[in-house]
Length: 223
Length: 248
Image (cartoon, rainbow over all chains, first blue to last red; front, side, top):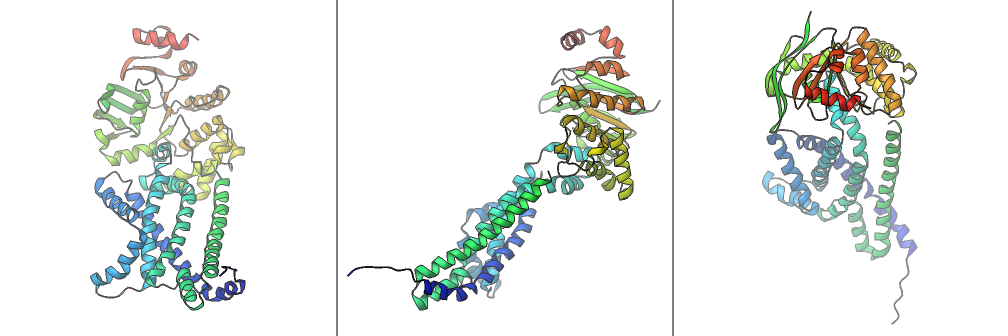
C-alpha cells in the first residue's frame, strides 16, 4: 500500500475559530503571570544585592528554587499538591498564573540584579555627593539607567514565559495547546492543527518582539 | 578664620593596607588647597573621606561643624556634610539618562525641594557661568569631555556648597580641553570658593593654590605656599617627586 500524506488546508482553516478561543487564556496566563513576576523580580532582585545577609539569603533561596526546578513540576505542585495543604481546590487558571509568576519572578530577579550591578558605581557616588539619600540616588539615578538595560532580557523572559504556558495544558486550562488537543481528539488532524497552533504562538511572540524593538530603540535614542 | 575642614590623626586602611597615616589637616574658609603626590599615595582617598565616600578607621574629621565618626558612624553628620560639600570626579559621572539641565536640577529639586522654576533658573545661570548655556537640552554623551566636566562643576555648584572637592578633574580629558576646565576652577577660586583639589596640573597648583600639600605613601610630608613647595622643597621625597613631574 502506498503511503501518501497531503496537508489538508481546509482542516487547518476549520480549526482556527476553535483554537482562537485558547488565545485569551494563553495571553492572560502569560501577561498576568509576568506582571506579578516583574513585581517579584524587582523585590527579590533588589534583596539579592543587599549588603546584609539576612536580606540576601531568602532572595537567593527563592531564585535558586524556582530556577532550579522544572516549571511543569511547579505547576503540578501548585495545582495538585497545594490543595492538600490549603484544604480546597485551586482553579487551573490561578495555578497557571501563579506558576508563571513564581518562575519568571526568579529569572527576572537575576535580570534586575544584573541590570542594577551593571551601572557604574561613580553614578551612586555622584548622587550621594550631591546630598541625595541612598533611596533617592537609587530610584532617580540608578534604576532608570538599569531598567533601560533590562529591557532586552525582560523581553526574552516574556517570550520564554509565553511558550511555557503551553505546558499548562496538562492541568486542563483551555489555553492554545489544550484547545488543539481537544480539537484533534475529534478530527484526528494533528499535523494541521499543531501547525496552526505553532503559527499562533509565533504571531504572539513576533508581535511582542516588534513592540520591544520599538521600545528599545526609543529608549536608547535619548542616551 | 572659620575652619571648614579639620582632620586630626586620621587613619584609613584598605584591608591591611594603611592608606592614610595620621593625617592632620585644616582648611580655612576661602582657601584653595591643592594636594599633589604620586599615584597610589592616598591623595584621592584623602578628599573622598571629606564627604564620606570613604570611611576612615580612626581619628577625627570635622566638616563645617559636623563631626564624622570613624567607620561610617554618625550618618546624620554625613547627610549634612554632603549637602554642603560639592564634588567633581575624574570621570565626570554625569547622569547619562538626564539632559544637561536636568543633571543640574536634580539635587536642588530632590534635596532642597526647590520649586521647578527656581531650579531651572539656577541651572541656566550656572550653565552660563561655565560657558555652555547652549547645550542645556542635550544629553551628556553628546558633549565633549571638557564640556561634560564643566557641567559636572555646575551640577555641584547648584547645591551652593561651602566647599568644593576636585578629584583629578582634568586627568580624563584630552589635552586641548584641560584649559577650559581649569579656567572655570580658576574663576571659582577667585570668587572665594573653598576648594580642595587633587591634581597633576602643577601650573594650576602654583598659580591658584593658597597652599600645596604633598602626600607620600599616605603621609603629608610637605605643606606650604606654592612658591615654597615648588621652588624650595624641604623634604627629599618632595624634591624627587617634583623633579620628575616638573622635568618635562
